[in-house]
Figure (tube, rainbow, N blue to C red):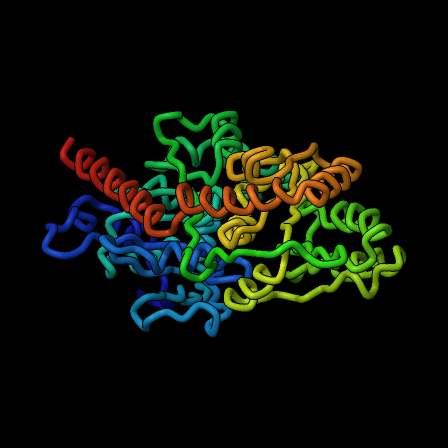
Length: 416
């Protein structure tokens, strides 16, 4: 095809039943994992999930390759979708005469169809909801099973694009199965009209060997070490954490607070720290890789994570860093937000307070410090809960069972 494009008739031919026939099971089944960007530094949990599959083969489709040193892949494990050169006549015909969506007239549709056919993908797993909305015209025509994962930000409203929710609702009706990281996200997807029979849980898997439990000692002279690891964005409630810590530090000057992560709020949060006179007590450690992050957790006593719901509906699933910290034995002080209460059992593995409640955060810190037995009990319970509910191998097995189910649905559909 000229200029690297598929003409519209060729696209339709690619989506014929004969072209996309279900292959015989003489090989491992294959899932294509679609990530628009592979991967941002904070998306380690996706890398673990994609590369952790045992019974399913996989390859990644991406439009932009990032952080290759953090997320290495074998040569055949990743496909960077090629950019197609514009053909004015064909583009004009598809856009203005055929009224096709942008994904078609810009050529992305044909590239994706060709790539999936060449790699004989049995299931397409799209990360995340907003990417699924972008791919909706393709997903509506692709006769094989498709799955979309929702992680939190992708259920929020788009004030600049009122049509987003309309297309999101259509996406939920179109795909074979829908994955969510928490019950709170499942509830939101049900509100958006997702058929209940399509919803499945997709918990984050934590490699416990990389975040081992250690036995901690009570700090001497009140030198408590608090830690929060996350993107430096408003949803994470970092300003509330800093203000609560500031109150505690007035009576515990040896206490310290380490914040690990990068993001747009570094400058205002640094300014807040300095205004509160905590320049020597609060340290911004930047983004830490897994091994360094684990070392940080092993020096800490408490994990803080006061997340809050944003006006546009943006919410947490279950924060990965929180689970990693719990695996090492850190009790949690957090908020009653999103999926956090599904991982932190109130008064068992941590304390939970309402969102934006600085007084409640401070009171929880005080309560934990004043009852060392509670701190020690919560430490053991936090590690045990992650072992039972979020261990990586078990979560990978559950994900592959979802792929099995989707493939089975696809085979039944092809025979009907």
